[in-house]
Length: 305
Image (cartoon, rainbow, N blue to C red):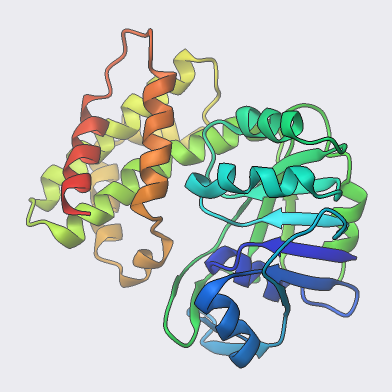
């Protein structure tokens, strides 16, 4: 299968590594120093939990023309950058596109790309259950087992699931088809948004840990109430139950998580967090619900970012 990984950050690099089998023809879209590094030194990953290093050569491109046709394009950029690549993807004739990562308005992105393209598009969404960090000479990868990609469609089934099954057939990474994936994406964003702001404040400010944990738990509750008010279902449901009914346990868990060094590898950029936060504020328009605890975390983390 001919595959394009559009984006060479942590997620894109790991996905290229995970899908790099004899049956898959992998190309990565990269630019600048990342492109130069990949071409000169290869794709070097340090897998933190597995305590191993991999290094392999991956074909790269720095431009995508209309007639560069791929069986599937995986877009692995930050949520805040998704709309920047819409014009390029719209003019390209490849049909099957998966946007991978946080997303609080997948339908808008799907409709925007469809509207701007003169070519038929099958657009769906995914989330790669890995983290990591970029270093000068390698990329750190945080994953459990062989990693997992969750995918799902906004309505009905993924029309190119047969191609996805072939792509993942001889790989070690797990491919999971999630039902009601919009609910899953919204719920996940509601989890990572306060959590990442908490990490920023823990690293950059001398705020009391107990105070930070308390504000974060309150922000989780606000977001879950907002999503449920908008008829989304929290997935998995245990998220909502823990933060609503077991606040003492939640406090202990958050304090523990804050002190784990590996957790730094799951953080997103503040630019992405800001884009997610702005979506929350738009969703919350014309409701009587408050997001004051989330607002506090956002404004305070913004001041130190």
